Amino acid sequence: MTTRRMFTAGAAGLATLALVPGAGAQALEKPRLTIGVGGKPLLYYLPLTIAETRGFFREEGLQVETNDFGGGSRALQALLGGSVDLVTGAYEHTIRMQTKGQDVRAVLELGRFPGIVLAVRKDRAAQIKGPADLKGAKIGVTAPGSSTNFFVNFLMARAGANPKDAAFVGVGTGLSAIAAMKRGEIDAISNLDPVISKLETDGDIVVMADTRTEAGTRAIFGGANPAAVVYMRNDFIERHPNTTQAIVNAFHKALRWIATASPDDIAKSVPETYYLGDRELYVRAVKASLETYSRDGIIRLDGMKSALGMLKEFDDELKNVRDEDLPRTFVERFARKAGGG
Image (cartoon, rainbow, N blue to C red; front, side, top):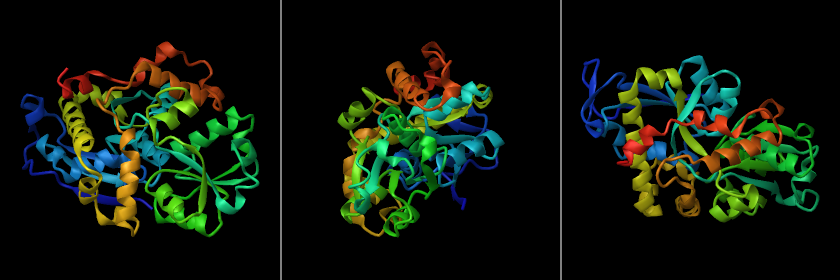
């Protein structure tokens, strides 16, 4: 179910144009924005919450409404349908949309490692020892067609299994995902923190693949693999360059704040509902995920190639995409400017 929350980051008055303090006081073409996200309480999207609660959108003259769609594929659909202006979501969507003639581009990297974990229900671990054993299994993902789904597709295909032989079930990003595992409705789960940390702590799962760290990501992908990004349609970027810069500035400030904040300070800066009923667990999950966040917001070509290689393992529609096509998925100048470069 889509939830709507209005976060009015300061007053822009009734003027149709606002000033951007962080962008040389240039007029904003569109100070009121709607952002789509697929599972906002997940640590994957922490920079969005921090940009709101720490007032970084307000500092850039923006008034932001956030729509949480409970899965990245649904947030993407909202962007294509015109009900949101931009999305915080998986980088892979920009590659797939480019091949479909939809000029969707990232403007800032939020996560340099996916942070996604594939785990099997503990009482099924003896039968499901690796991705190849997932044939016939019910696998919980945030939403079908989301990055959590892509991750399992890749692992199964690389292991010689066909992802079409598994059943993917949308279980959401919070208590619903935890409940599905605890009730035995799914055999395995591909999700993120704090959901994974909760299931680990309760002894419900055995982790099969973990991309919450650089070592784990490199073991699976052989290198960097960009995760959450801020993406939007390129025609929005062209019509609203000052607004786009303000958006990137706000998220960039959030990344810098996260890089220096303690896990406890981060927990204090998010709604208590994010804790899943256990603040201590949430703090531990934050600590485990800090390595995933981007340091400068720049998506590098090796990461782009890694993401494309992952998609090609299971998506024949992308077999003709070339490495030289990838720079089109990322507009770098906004991140460079936000970082002072």
